[in-house]
Length: 465
Image (tube, rainbow, N blue to C red):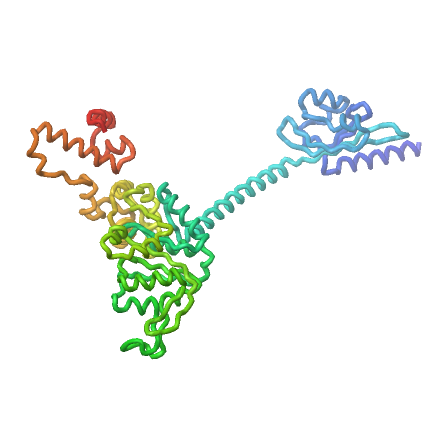
């Protein structure tokens, strides 16, 4: 009697222990029949004990209560097994089955299951967050790389400027003399500095000298320096020139074609010997400096006219880089508009935007002054704008007129050489030809000319354009 009460007492304690577990507990016999589950498991699995007790786990799995059974795995392997189990209610469980071996024989399987649905969701959210962070870091690195690569935003997307940029990268790797050619305002000085920043001389000085901005009488002493007593009013201690100041770095000689012929001889001598002589000095100084020159003039024409030395031309023209005008790389205009708008908004504490019509209008404008003109225009618009957006009314009338009118004027004399019909045909053809130069598609062409796209297509065929 006492022994029976003792067993019952231990059974009650065991049952209390099982029910107190936070994890779900299943007890099955060696054949996989469910003998007991605790309250925690009922809650986790969204079932009652009556639904599973007395049933085989294989049958419960076939009924779809769970997708796999750790009890069956333990029965096969006779050792502890842990699996990830998916329930039909959408929960995910970490389930561990432990075999109870008595006299080398499997007697029971005790399984504990823990709901890790929230843990997995948190893990997935963490992974998603990490992926977002990774993308942000990657994007930030790309932006930082681009800012570093572009050195204060060298903005472009056109094929023409990509070719220029590739040449910049190549010449930066060596110390060869570079000749930058292009119209005023295309960014020659910007490119010269970019070459310097990309080169091994980046830590050295970058000296920019505009040969056309210094009087001829002073240019020699400014470039090569002078010694004490070299000329009247000379500094008592003498003065180093731009070549010496650029030692170890880059000397950018802008508007090289404005340099007098006698100084061209001294520049040629330096390029051949890497030595200079100050004005009034008898000693030569060896200078380690890279030379970049630039001009907006037809230097070959000047050579033919004997206004620029041919031997110097061949010496500085080792690697010529032609920078195309803005009108020949329209794709860059929207980027430049955005860049300069951001710059001047920040400078003047504003948050202006460009009206779509203004952007379209400026993209059609030829910008004869190139990037410099574009920059000055945007600065003016930002300073003078009264509304939150810059609209067409803010654009100078002269600019609007130049866009609306044909980029090529029609010769008034030819109108009197033909009949009215012939003259109209010729005017129509010339207008379409001129419009095609600033429009990429027939839709743009139609919008500019104020006609439909089918009409544009028909007239293009009519005039064999």
